Image (cartoon, rainbow, N blue to C red; front, top):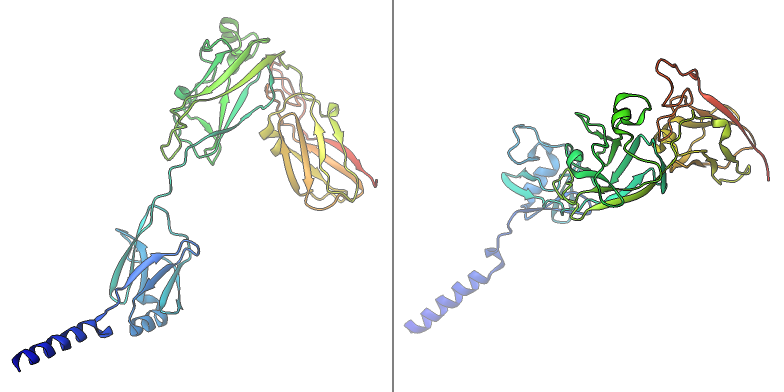
Length: 357
């Protein structure tokens, strides 16, 4: 009899332990990568109702934040889950704390995978550059760290001999706002004829010679990741370009009215491509700016319009500040005599007729 009672008590205890009433859902939070929302599960019905009816009951903020205020969020329900949608995306690699229904939930986001930077382009992109080229541009795939160009970028002859001090030493390096494009300024004092550095050391680039620009494998991105392998660009040096720019010499290929073919300019020399993109604009027959996609490789300029060309007279407006890669402007050549003042202060305007095919 005693044994029977013992077996009954054990059976009842096992049934109680296996009962669904013994299972208590754990409150948890996770980030949904697709929507950027924080998904909270395991809330009791009354806590879910409280969170949906009172926005103050939910607070999302950076871990260890000194502010008592949470981020701006919207609250909704998806089945048995509470959806907390931040107004601004949460940052990879950061940790957040979500407070809801007296629960404090930590959400740690994984850091982004390390991305190896690459040298994606070099300008001027032409194979032959003028001997008095003033600027070179390096474009990287990732934002790069400042303060390393002097040590990580070198210019050598085709035989591997380093060119001594080719670049102007500046206290602040020349990067665009995204820190993906660096400007290398060849020493103007060595380029401009007749001044001391040019007389004593000559120009960094010599006509008829071939060179390689080398970026060290140790050059690092702003996130601290190195290139991993050296990158180099080879080019030859041709005669210097010492003439002022004359837009009247450009070749213009006008598209047909009704089409969206590009309007194209072919320059008579290599222009500074960045300057060409900024300082050459186009007005339509009514005087309105023409909107479209503008490209330039330094050897030319083109515009692909957003809407078909209309028949009529267009005005190509060239800002007098436009420069070629040797620093020549419309007003004067770079090697103008000391004291010379450029006479071109107004834009040069070229008329382009677009007609029906």
